[in-house]
Picture 1 (cartoon, rainbow, N blue to C red):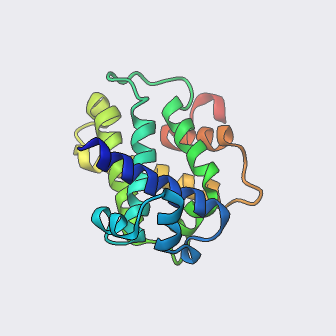
Picture 2 (cartoon, one colour; picture 1 turned 90 degrees about the vertical axis):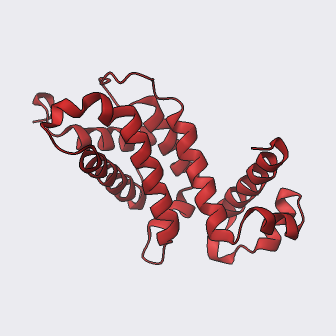
Amino acid sequence: MDVRVERTRRRLQDALLELARERPLDEITVAEITVRAGVNRSSFYQHYSDKETLLADALDAAAEAAARMLPDHYEPPSGPPQALVVFLQHVDEHAELYRSVFGPTGSAAVLTRLRARIDAIVRAGFVSAAAEAYDGLPVDIIAAGITGSALGVVEAWLMRDPRPSVEVGAGWVWRALLGPGPDWA
């Protein structure tokens, strides 16, 4: 991808995330995003058809950044992987935005993109290496189960008031994925 295109997209994504920390997503306009990003309105529409697509790209980029921290060869860590902690730090930093995405009036398109990104990360970083442990289950079924469980726990953690720390949330996701262990009884 052209460096200028990538830079413009990143500036638009960052602008949206900054604005979303200040007020609800549905109150943010494309004009405000472009001003904050330092680009003109036509540049916005050269890259994105609407605010929802921009949001999906911004959240997708955050998940991808966390995925880059995963090792090439999967070895089960004793605790939550650092990539999970980094992703939840991003979710925590943009909690109100994620609450609106997961909430009852959230964006199905954004959630679909987020789910697809996490599914791809799970397939690449975990399922392929550990598929034999699942006794013949298809890889897409394994990945869907892990993705759905992880997102469900992230949503439940995110909606708690007060919200526990990122470390606690990462621990909950990790424990929910691993199932009950001898130390957890």
